[in-house]
Amino acid sequence: MGFSVMIVDDSPAMRKFMRRVVDLTGLGECEYVEAANGREGLDRLRERHVDVILTDINMPEMNGEQFVETLDGDPTLRQIPVVVVSTDASDHRMNRMLSLGARGYVKKPFQPEMLRAELERILGVEHAC
Amino acid sequence: MPAEVQYEAVLQTALTEVLETMFFASVGGEIPTPAGPDALMATLRFVGQPSGSFSLAVSREAAEEMAAGFLGFEDEVTPGQPAEVIREMANMVCGSFLSKVESDTHFELSSPQTPAEFPPEAWRCSFELENGSIEVGLTTLP
Image (cartoon, rainbow over all chains, first blue to last red; front, side, top):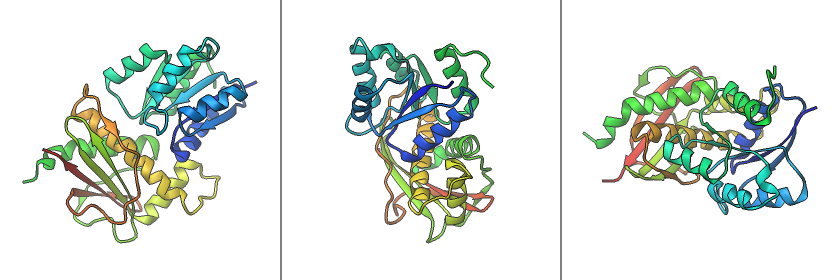
């Protein structure tokens, strides 16, 4: 039994790559919900529940900071763990996103094992193969 | 000597890191030739310390092969996908480069675009790939 994973990124190629990486993590057969920006992500979340959100930061219409902040302000949505996946490797940005409510941060480029470890930690899954 | 020359080593490091980690491609030594007229290109702007623009051009065969690898070998790559993958590559290389230049500076990156031509004003350098070459271009604002 896998998880329901939301991937929020304005790059269709990166969304597809992320799906592949999550599939390789051994978390089971996951379902995916995709969105091109935070606004679309919020719209999707009104339609269905997800177990974890992977989000970029630099996106049009609603960026990752605004998205995470909005999620954290909603008593239902804030329960969903958010992992930021971004090219911004600055401590400033990472600390900012964690302070807004993100529970994890993976810097691009990343080894698949890095994303796996973060998902395992956040979802409480041990030793996914 | 253009100011961008000081960034050459960092650019090469960022390029190597991104291509090896995300695209499973090895970056060879610097070569004098550009990526070629049929190369796939991407460009984006960045605002921070410094500000400027970053461009990438990948020879077509190498771009298509890396796109197939990035998206999954089992999938047939549709016509627009290699260009989209190169735009994402530019985003990651630029982000990695800026993080190395000023590790604690906040940068804003624009969405990568596919330009009609490589920016003529950019300082540029090219590197060998297994099936072609990759050219990076950088312009920094004073």
